[in-house]
Image (cartoon, rainbow, N blue to C red):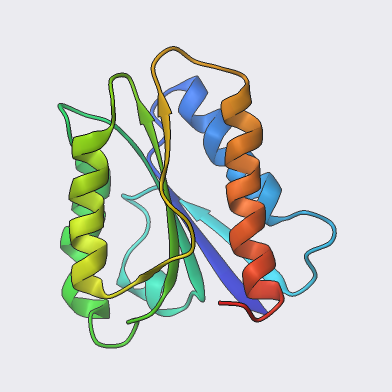
Length: 153
């Protein structure tokens, strides 16, 4: 079994809905050989990364950058996984009240240093809440899990 790790900062109802949608997509009935693990950034660490085959990162836009929770996760994990997990398939979604540009740039900088591999462009859920965000988050989880399931990543 492949392991997909979802590390999502979900401080509000809407961000929890997004995290649950990513998980629902990753656990789609047609995906047979992927186990999904969901943790908050405070609960996840280097061991979780070392044990996974792919990762989805979820964050809010906080003061123009990633949440402090996700930054803390990277601070605690970076050097412990740097050499062992190069090429790790990853994806990112951002719940942005504004434009999400600084958040995207901050996470991309860290992911570049880790030498992880993007499976798609980051999703930025901008502005007022829209119900379409849910299906897009679900599709993100399904895409990464299906790629792992089929050996594409």
